[in-house]
Length: 346
Image 1 (tube, one colour):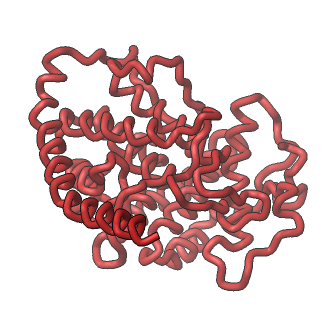
Image 2: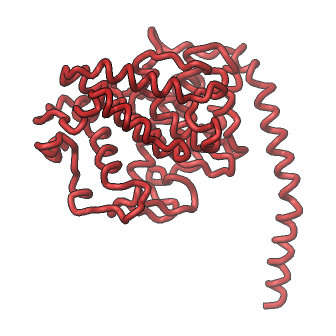
């Protein structure tokens, strides 16, 4: 992995990107893909003790206040999901420059936080819900920069509003896409926020646990016989348009499997009584999409009283599911009748 580092810039350029150029106007352009790969590879190298040969020179310009300010001001919060990734990349790299390269990045990181605090919606603590984008994109984007908030212990100004927004996205199938069939990204983005805020404050905790249990069932239902996971059900996938990452509908992929397992590990921090989560999950210590700060002193074990507190909220979801089934019954009957008529005619 370290051999993919470009000696001039310090960025990681894997074999899949050496000859690849995204189509004009692609959402994930070459610059985005290289930042994405770099910010995935650096923490992996750190985790396994692989020393990088070169500094990340391409990131040094972000330590200049004028350059960073101009870059931040160009973020388009109408595309909050995409920009959440971009903003994480720069925040993550500033932490790396400060802690690993010992580059003077602390002031730039302060500016990074100031800009985000100023642009966050005070009602949701997200970026974009104040008139730029839907709550879905804001959550799926905000997850990324919030990782830096948690890592640096920087306060979220309205955590209650953030919890309310995320809980409001959950579908009857347990996933965190309002139209159902939530994918690996959408679910981990939502679960990570809920787990972190569950640890920070005593707010709607029983409802969060019910939401996590329902999402657990949703994730396990998507697992394939080979042990892996597709991104979601019945849809093909190609990861950010990169050749060689295409997968048929319902086919297991490395990316989706990694994110699903990470989501299960996050759930295990809270749902200590779920048999499927009794595994020795571990997180990387290095800021990245695979990082999480475990409980200090061990996980608090759930009690009978905790399960009792969940019961009313679980019943609400059960009633919603029953009502949904009732509404679907006429449709299913019409489909069955249509099939029977076709069989009789054939």
